Image (cartoon, rainbow, N blue to C red; front, side):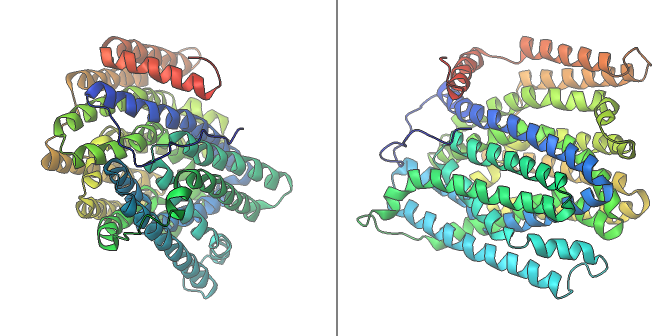
Length: 519
């Protein structure tokens, strides 16, 4: 795998010149294509990792591993105090406005905040587990948490470095270092740990090693963009602490809450039930999250474009771009969700028999993820237009719904209760953010074409589910194939516009270029 990238432009603060919706869409597609290509490989590797560890470790140890990685991830998101998102917001704006002094200050201020926050969060986790404050009734889990605590600062720095590079719209570099290198090293390391019989601590060490390798690669790319600016003594450092932290603090808490809302179930299942239930829940949830793949691809490029267009008061262009992003997201995510709903038993036939109940857990979570995913581009308008406090408030409300429902349902229903709580919370959160985004910007994400795609996908999924219970030869294989072909035909007929077709040609050329082939 190559880690080379072309040298960046001489001045990373140079403004973009696109002035119409077609150009905006092509910018969105160009960066999203790179992230999507990396994301497909990333999700494929992560799915293989999850399947391999679930079958190799068994539900109990796999549940303990999942719990430790969840805690590590939540703290890693919290530690930068939102500066990993803040640098995307301010970096994009300062680059367009050529405010190099403020870009320099935001970079250094965010880096300092991330280092301090990472050390504090990692130290608290290590001290709390070693002194008996956390998980005293589960000493094996507490010891494993203490083992991964040193990786919290590395995780925080990795997220900040990725945000800094993405603020320059360098999606190729982050695809290589974050989306590909990270899961690839994790997979190789986990395979070696299992082969050597190192168990839980071996696979945790593999994850920590992958974090360090990914951070090193991302740092190399970040230096290509910012080393000249940071070493240029003629550019003063305008720290801008008030504006940076005023935006980033609520965003950081909201980001951590998002992780909690996503994985509160795992934390509560471990608290209220057992590691076995965590393992079953995780096996189902990892497939339900497949719909997040195009979300990451599109919103990664969408976020800085929102900041630019809103900062330049170009609401009409923003409205048009939102419709494009939402339609593309539906086109890409719908077949994933349709496939999961139509053939859950077929998917879990690759697992050991003790994971059979994870199929129904997955279906419940998918129902909530459908609503959450299609509303995500509109939801990103809230923080990217500077309303990070509102973003935080809505996240807190979603977390409250998830926790309260999970607290009641998990003791009675185990992983299924957690899935119901998660699906309900994500659905309500998505609707609330959709309403708030429209109130702020007067931009609406759903066009007639998007509505036809959503309605058609729903009908196809319902028919496929019914066919899957008819006892046809091959079980769910035939209904799955028919459903996917039907949706492909629907997307081909109603999902494209002339701008889309021109953009897809550019995306094809960009992807072929990434593979070293002529477009």
